[in-house]
Image (cartoon, rainbow, N blue to C red; front, side, top):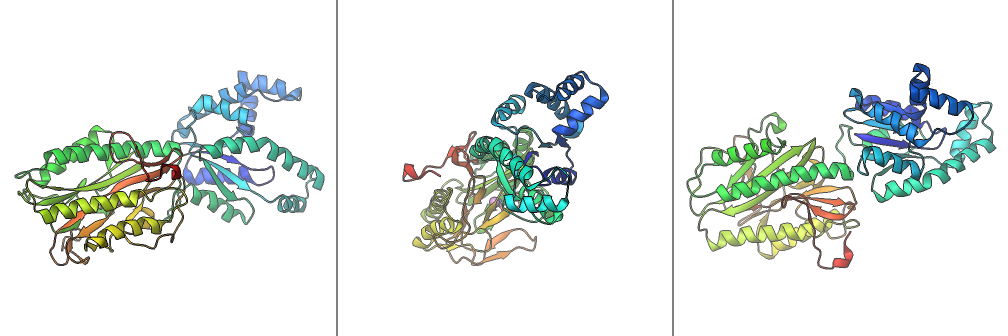
Length: 449
Ligand code: MF3
Ligand code: CO
């Protein structure tokens, strides 16, 4: 996790940066500390900085960037870092981009502090050089300097605003929770860098789909399909989202034939002409998940089965077309359910879609029913798995004694389709449809969110 903390002088940003860094197990890189360290250990850069500071000048950005480069290359910064004090200006953002690239940060955590509250707080602290006037002047300088920086990072979709005033623990909790390492379940907002990892995970899932689709035929066993999947996950430098899920799930695929709705465990069963099979796969690339499913017919299948499969896929696409900034969760469920109901299918309610990111299952739940315009607002940085499950008969489900296999209660056929869809800075994208993300196509091209 690579973070930048930005906040006005006196907002306690440095203290918070240290606490969050400790909690995440990454270094807190404060530019001030870094200068002092170089000066006190007498490095060449330190001597330059010392000279400049003694003459009252500003340290040039190249020097700061060189120091940062060295600091970031140290072992403890392998899992990320928190920058504090640099960059402060738009020009410094460019200098940092030169070092870590435009996608180099995961989040920019901005401490929002009310000017009057800050004045009150700092006056109460009673430092000699803190008069109301100096505090206000410093605050305005900060605001003028950082506005262009916030603008740049805002356009990159990196900004997480946190409330900088309040009891210290609450203030710390806030950025921690926002950067989603907090264990409590929450909606996570992903950066471009994080989405890039999810794209790789999604591409791996798409590759599994393609290979399993190709291989699934009468006479082929579910275990053979599982082997294909395990190999592709390894070849792509990924791990499985499913294997060992809840400490017990034994495979990288869920293979759900006929009346199995979801979570079927690959076994010795050999596919037969006329079967339908739902194939669900999940992969993790550098800590980020992709998850998707499809249903196919094995050889010749009945018209009834084909219609079920096609309609469930159609419902998936209808749900996907609702994923854009400003729409709501209920819009997705309503679009999915409308199609299921129109064909009289049982729409499964006990199992739902979900948010996805560092965990396969994150908030929010994405049900396959809902009221248009209701529920949480969708926004940039979210990623959702949309996964309609339709039954030819009633919607009701039952679980086998193995604790996993979910079947239709009435024994009728069931189909399941799923994609991982993200609202990226470039608009909504499907991550699990192929080697590259596929932009979501809306009916009205103008409404792209
Ligand atoms: N793709 C499934 C889902 O979205 C997850 C399979 S459950 C597991 O819920 F146990 F296999 F992980
Ligand atoms: Co899923």
